[in-house]
Length: 332
Ligand SMILES: NC(=O)C1=CN([C@@H]2O[C@H](COP(=O)(O)OP(=O)(O)OC[C@H]3O[C@@H](n4cnc5c(N)ncnc54)[C@H](O)[C@@H]3O)[C@@H](O)[C@H]2O)C=CC1
Ligand SMILES: O=C(CO)COP(=O)(O)O
Image (cartoon, rainbow, N blue to C red; front, side):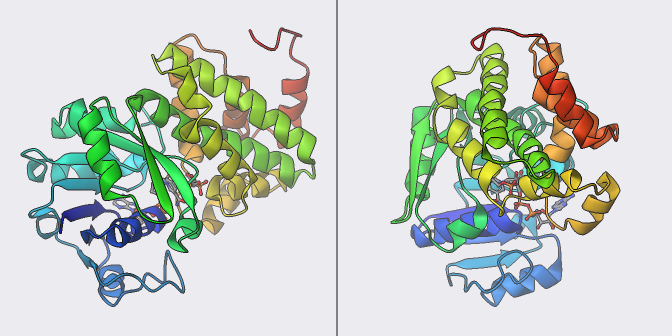
């Protein structure tokens, strides 16, 4: 039996630990809070996966050394903006031939780095042993064992295949891809587009408006991904349009729900106070905008989401601005 370490006992860390356990692995989860670790060791996570009985193959600890000991694969699932701080403490443990898996969908504020870049920089792990798992994977559906597929992206085919083999179950189908950049950009940007779709929903707009934002959001994502060297085909796959659809359309999405509340007129502070879980797009809209500007990429939806979220520009105003832009060809 393989031993796999999962850092982060939130919604996705716990759901992914369940997949790994169902795939036959012995899974050790690191959690920050002793009370949550104690819950996991009783086979539940009422904070992040209420009503779900967890596999007996999952155990948990607050001690990173104990969690990593003997693991060939280490999965990271903490909020993107806290990765660097956490990794600084964990880096000495990530030695040897371990494969590191990022489940995170964000871009670091201040550096505009993707999560694999942060892992490479802080832990010194070569990119050939860093993979990202990304796709339409709403944790609540996955932990209920509803069928879904995902992409395991890594420049090294053997590493990608090792991770894919470790997380394949009767309900979860991983595809491999060499396009780490595309998978990470697809995963991070769709959160911002989901905020925009949520805002439209909150304003009472219907499906035409939402489909328009999703489609033009995909155009922005593709432009940015290609400018960073990604394969455009990734954008028409699970880590691109697949995740975009799931996140933009589902009431289970925290980013979508966050956007709905902003659209209904709540302030950023009010929505933040009501939101217990991580809505990555709220912070990453700024870093993604900076990344796009730094690469000369036009991202009007992301720009307007950033204004609504961080400059308190009314949501009605950003819609008007998007529609008033100069006419252009759809494919420019
Ligand atoms: N929930 C989902 O459906 C999916 C989430 N993701 C991504 O997975 C990543 C993790 O998200 P979730 O598990 O959903 O978030 P979550 O909010 O459910 O859980 C986050 C976990 O990190 C812990 N945490 C918070 N601040 C921390 C810090 N400073 N240091 C260490 N731990 C900290 C929390 O206590 C919690 O256990 C995000 O990047 C998200 O975009 C990706 C696919 C699906
Ligand atoms: O990434 C996700 C689904 O693939 C989860 O989206 P949210 O973080 O918006 O809930």
